[in-house]
Image (cartoon, rainbow, N blue to C red):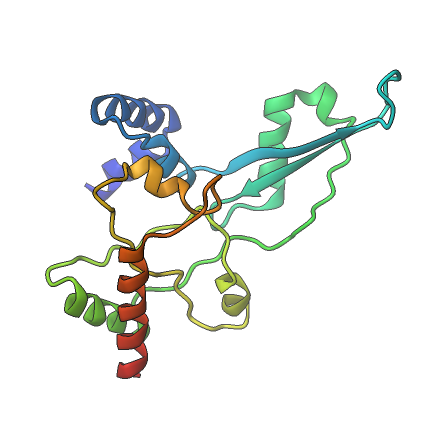
Length: 197
């Protein structure tokens, strides 16, 4: 089974098709959640060119928010950009990294991970702790560079008045916020974790 799953996840067209189908059936945008966990994401966030409205600038600047999977190097990202814009335009580009931090992970066979499992069983009996990647960037990467085990974990429950898509869009969204329910759950989690240490 792991071999079959690995084969499917290596074929992005299959995953896109499946997530689009499930999204239509469920009414939830699963692509927004699934795709950043199985492929590098490149999002244009800023574009600048020229200083006057009546002249064409010979230079343009685009800022890309690039999130890579663990183990993917800058050279691989450059190939992805070249494939997207074509070799002619790519060879005229100057790529200047604003951040050079690569994606990081922590092992799960640690006392800290087991402690998180124990505390979550106190809060939500029967809950399963499942490791996964996060498409977001956290300060954990700086701790991991120093050899410190770090998990970007805080329990979040889906409020009944939100869809999964709306829940996923709360962080850094147009109306960024968290619910009172999740504030209380996260506070209880943090308290119990510190109490057990």
